[in-house]
Length: 479
Image 1: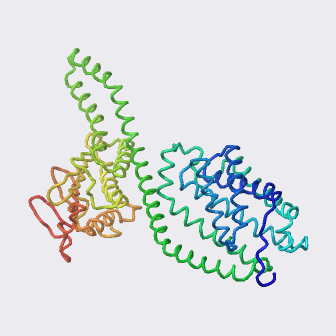
Image 2 (image 1 turned 120 degrees about the vertical axis):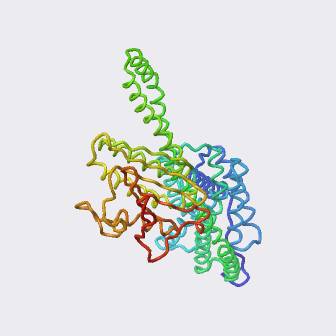
Image 3 (image 1 turned 90 degrees about the horizontal axis):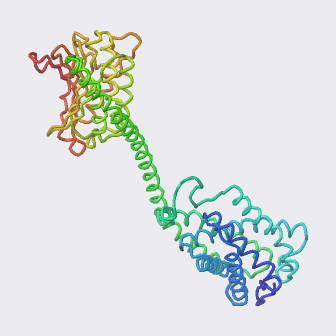
């Protein structure tokens, strides 16, 4: 191109009808399908006509190469918005997605076709038939991609087919994650545009001054994207946190559902229990009626205790331990007299601490007579924090109770002796204590933990005083 000569990016009416119009239709269709929108044929036709007309006018104007590409991208977004009336966010994402994919296809197919046909870009652009011929492979690839997305219901942004999300839910997601979508697409779109501009300048289609102006604009765009990147990372962090919270909520709802199912079943069977008690009283079996009422009350009371925890992970653990106790013909009696929402432990730590205490109690109870196989769990809260008590029949299984909490010490063959050591370590980490005592023919383990909002007020055992007897009358040792 000679100095002062204008760029040759001009379109005849024929290429306008057979290139620009179908190009817009295919780009808009692919972008909308990937954004989860199913456009109608007349909407695509309207967008194609709008974009073809504006493209013709833009190419007649003195707007530099590169700038007119970005202007046409904005006009495509406007066309999608005006014709389909989707949200601006959806229109922007759909337009950028379609143009980015089309630009990527063009950067691959155009150099290959020029190489094999031995034409130059300066010959192709002003020649309507060559321009149409070079567009056909790109149109075929765009059409194939759109058909595959429709065939397999593939979408990048729309709600999954079986997700159950309604229009309102998806609009809310669009508003929440629009910046993430935009900042994920824009760098690729700008890279594709820069690649096309560089190729056009390299083959001599446009003067270098257009490339210099375009590079200046790209530098500004990179600065803007760099400034917005922390916002994108923050949005991703929020998304991860919300997804984690959603998983925890779903898990809680599953446990609550199981509790409700059990309560409904008990409600259904309750009138049968009343009939049985009435029959026993009528025939004078008062002792049997009393025992039947006691067992029925325990069955009904357990779900209420589990609901009261306000802690789905502890609820799930207690469900598991109740089933384990039942399999061992042991009665586990949980009494949760407060909410566990202020428990300072993480879900993993809470389940490990309670699980170790209950497992030890259940194993210690296995040798007791059937009528004495009872394990009590009681959780209370006072002004200092939480008090967790686990009791089982029998004496403290060690001459010196502090040994029970040493790593590796065990009175049971085949055990590693790490359970109670883990309980002590967890309690001390949060400023709490662990105590063991003998009371009423039972071995009682008592853990004290501060409230989550006031850990500094918790009990911390002074260093070097492990195993000190705190009260010989009560037989209690803090370890």
